[in-house]
Length: 238
Image 1 (cartoon, helix red, strand yellow):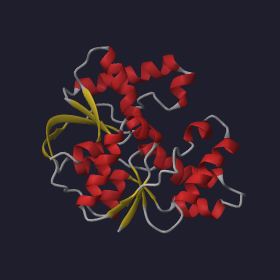
Image 2: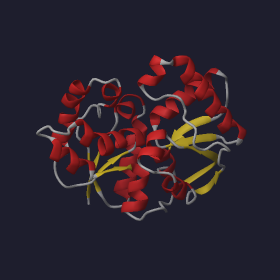
Image 3: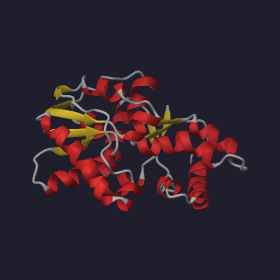
Image 4: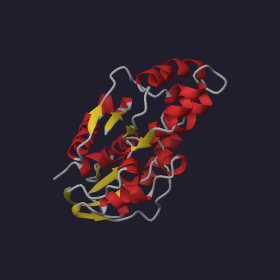
């Protein structure tokens, strides 16, 4: 099938290997991947900041670029939740309301699409390391994505998955939250980092590059050896 890959701005600007890994995985499975360069952001920062009118300008470009019937896959629970759950609210009582609802029904988070839509858990991946997994808030709470990434990780050869004792706490980033409340954000991140370190893992895996960026920054400043990596990069390894 043809798949539209929605590359979030964080991935586009800072972690392009995540998008490249997603393309490699879908092409390996025999699918055609398309990427729309006209999309630069889902609009979540301005939406969370209360600037809904400005957000509609950004989101309208997304609606236009992704018009059609093909599935849209996002390697980010945060951005997937924005389009899937909040676009219908953003465009309610506007001329684009129907288009927003239709698009929301075609948007899937990366691991959920692999497991729930394609029925794939085995990708022939190999990643010889001990890892733990961080559930991003939007993926876990807005999209109910929890088991899917773990099913995928458990099929990776030579990978050992060790769960954190506290699996559901937030990393503290939250986009503009980290800017508005830096001390709280840092404290939350340090708590999450400590939970990850307690597992003895070599890598901290997640579906969200923004969470990983925040946690890697805190870990690096404390000279910790724990490294962060996106799920797609693990699954593309062989």
